Image (cartoon, rainbow, N blue to C red; front, side):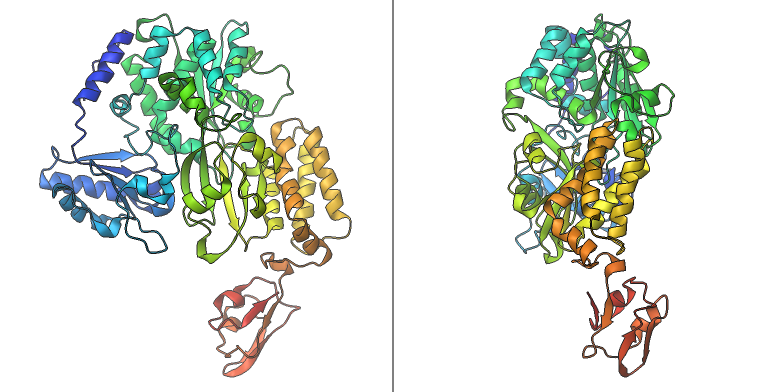
Length: 620
C-alpha cells in the first residue's frame, strides 16, 4: 500500500480509505505479534525469527508478519494471533516458529500446545474471543491495539482511521462536535471524570489570541500502563482525537506531554506524527480546509506531580513543574496565558468512535452517569494480568474472577487498590460494586486513570498504605506545607507501625492529619495523597490496631514484627537455616535437632523460613 501524498481534500481522504479497505485481502494468512510489552519476554526475537523463516522459504507473498502493540494478555507473553483463522497463541518461543509457519500454510491447522488452557484443565481454546480473559471485554479505545502495526498509517486507515476527521471537516462545525461529545456523556479518563464536552465548551467560548490543546500522557501511577499501551499500539487514534478536539475548540497547536520513560511510545508517536503530516492530516490548511493544526511532543522528566494540569503546563513552559492555584482554570488562562484544553490519552482515543458511531451508540454502554468503557491495567495477585477494557458498570467481581481468573496460588481476595496513589482499597465485601465514578467514590476509592492492583490475603494492608504514602511524599513538589510536611509525617507514622513503633493515639492522629492534608493541600496530588491510608483505615482498622496495640502483623509480612521460631518436632537439623542466616543467629549441631534462633540477634529477615526444606521454621 502506497497512498498518494499529500491529500488536498476531504474527498481524497475518503477515497484513500475506501481504496485501502478494498485492496485489503482479509483471507491472507497474517501473524500479528505483539512487540511492545511482550518484548520483555522475547517478542522481538520471536518476530525476527518469523521474518527470517518467511524469507528463507520465499513466502513473502503468502504470509505477512505484522508487528503490533499490546494484545492485552500480558501474563501469557509473548502472544500472537493468526489470521484469518483467529487462532490465539501464547507463550510463543523462537523454537515454535517453524511449526507455526507450517501449520498456517497447511489450511490453517492449529498448533495445539500454544493454545490457551485455563488452570482448571479445560480443553484448549483456539479463538481469542473465547478466552475468558477477553470474553467480557468491549474494545473501543483498544480497538486497534494488537491489530495493526502502529508504525504504518495505512494499517490505521484500513480500519477506518481518520474517517472521523473526514466527517468532522466535511459535515460538522465546532459546536456540532462539542454537542455530540456532550450527548455521548464522555467523562475525562484521567482521574477527575469531568465531562469532556463541557470542558471543550469552556475553551471554545474563551477569548484569546491563540488556543492550545494538550494531551496529558504523563502516566505515573504505580502499576498503570493504559496510556502507554495506547500510544505504543495505536498512536493514530490519539492524533485523530486531537485533530477533532482542535477543530472543536479552535486550537492551532497541539502538544503531547509524555514521560521520557516511555521510549517505545515516543518512537511510535514520532513516526505517526510524521506520517500524518506527510499525508496532509496535520499542518497548514488540513485537507484543503481553512483548519491549520500541528502537534509536537514534549518529554516530561517523570515527575508524578506534572500529571496535574497546572504543573504540566509549567513544565512545558520550561519552568519547574509546580501546581498553581485555580482559578483561573486552563480553559481561561492556561499555557503561556492562553486558553488551553487538556485531555488525557484515553479520553482522546474515544473521540473518533463517538463521531463515527454516534453519541447514542457510545452512551448505550455503561451506566447512567458513567458512559462508555474504561481501560484498566490489571495487576497484582490475579491469575491473569494485563490490559483490559470493559463497559462502565461491570462489577469488580467480574474483573477479578472472570477476566482475572481469580486469585493465584489458591489464596483469597483481600482488596483491590483502584486509582493508584490517589485512590483507595476496595475490600472483599464490595466485590459486587459496579465500576463507575460514583459507586467507587461511595466505597472510598476513585476511578483514577485506571490502575487496578489486586492483593491477596498474604498482603499487609498497613504496609500497602506505607508504600503509597512513600510514593506520594517522594513525588511531592514541596510547594505547599500540608503536602510537603504532612504526607511525609503520615508516611513516617505508618512506617513506624510496620516496625513496632506505634503507640496509643497514633491511629487517631493519623486520621486527623489525613483529613487536614486532604482539605488544605494546593493541588490534587496533595488532596488525594491520604486516600490510600484513609480507605485502609476505613476498611481494615483491625490490622492497624494489631500493628499499633499488639505490635504484630496479622499476615506476617512486616518482618520487624514477625517472630521466627523452630518447631522442634519438625526440625531435622539439616543445618540449612544456620548456613543461610545472614547474621548467624541460629545455633545447633548437624544431625542433632532442634536448632535454636537467638531472638535478640535475629533481624527478622525471613531467610530461615524461606530455605527450610521441612517447614520447621514458624513465624508469628
